[in-house]
Amino acid sequence: MIRVVLPQHLRVLARVEDHVELEVKGPVTIRSILDSLEARYPMLSGTIRDHVTQERRPFLRFFANDEDWSQQPTDAPLPEPVASGAEPLRIIGAIAGG
Amino acid sequence: MSDVRVLVGTRKGAFVLTADGRRKTWSVSGPHFAGWEIFHAKGSPADPSRLYASQTSAWFGQVIQRSDDGGESWYQPGTPPGEATTTPEGVPRGESNKFVYDESPETGKPLTTHQWYDGTPHPWEFKRVWHLEPSLTDPDTVYAGVEDAALFRSADGGKAWQELAGLRGHGSGSQWAPGAGGMGLHTILIDPENQNRMIVAISAAGVFRTEDGARTWKPANRGLHSAHMPNPTAEVGHCVHHLAMHRSRPRVLFMQKHWDVMRSDDAGESWREVSGNLPTDFGFAIDVHAHEPETVYVVPIKSDSEHFPLEGKLRVYRSRTGGNEWEPLTEGLPQRDCYVNVLRDAMAVDSLDPCGVYFGTTGGQVYASADAGDSWTPIVRDLPAVLSIEVQTLP
Image (cartoon, rainbow over all chains, first blue to last red; front, top):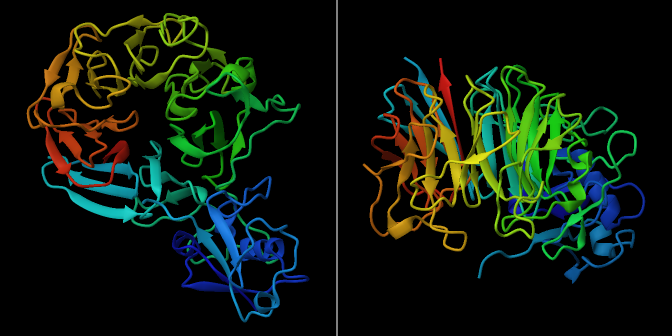
């Protein structure tokens, strides 16, 4: 199972605690994880990536195995610890305020 | 005795304020959707238990919330609480936050750019829903005014949204430009005597009217004069802040423009200024008394660069003559050191007798008057900045 840690506001929307666990078919990538996440939690559609362009919303970042994957191709295979479920994919909101 | 429910949208959540018809003792529930901007929440005239709310965030985008029990509980349309969020095949049941511009040649026009602040073409980008206007007769039909400016409609209770592309595609859309607060469609008026006639307002494009149920539109800005424009009387480009209509006389409209308070007696075909003796005619909010169609309320704000009341005195101004002659209403309102703003959608009236008037401030106060504005009392003083106020008078 793939684990995904969501920002607090999205946990509230999805009515989940802490993190979610997902089945991901095929290569584990940002795109395949988000596809699975939105299928399981459709209320999150459009909140992480644009409905149409599929581009990441600008104030969000993706971290996998402590590395910033926000600028990487969304079809690039994620590190093994994330693909195996040992480490979560972390979706992080930019810090607001000073 | 009737009850009153006040729906308050703020920078950090929604609040629901309720009282009986005396309007003296209030209950406060919230924050709902804590931490999110609630640009607007409004109830259906056809079913007062049906509420819609626009929940937005620069981080996470747009969410539409709906309540079927007067705000006791909320859900995203298409995914009711307790129900599976997908079909057995795994397909999402609803796409209630999906606002996609219609650029197809068949239904709209392939309009892809408007003007940016500097006059250059800029791609149309959906940002948020500014205003939700439920149908007067069908609880499942609701209109959404959005930024970048366009009009959407849902006919299934907010589950799915379609752009009414005739507005952007009527011809002047490529000339629209944002105001300082963005390019939002913020006002939607439906004529109760002819629901095919709708009037919308956009900052900073102006007023537009349809006579055929939103299929075709034309600008309705004749008589407006905006000194900030290269051509002050141009057909489009006016920074209209808000419009108000009285249900019994829908061809009479009142406008708070960037500067100037205006009036139309012909459903927006032409406008004339009625600022009269106002100490400043800049402002955002405007509304009409529930039973006296010539009684109008505004909250004058010092200027477009100083968004607070003149002299630190929070004053509502009332005209009982449909404009031009205005009187300040101050009893119960702070008359020194007050530097809040009252935003365009943050004033509303109830339909009790005497008429109740309500407004919210960027300082988090919601003021109520149970005597048509003669005196005011804060219902709450310390909410987050208030973005919108709507009032329901309940049987």
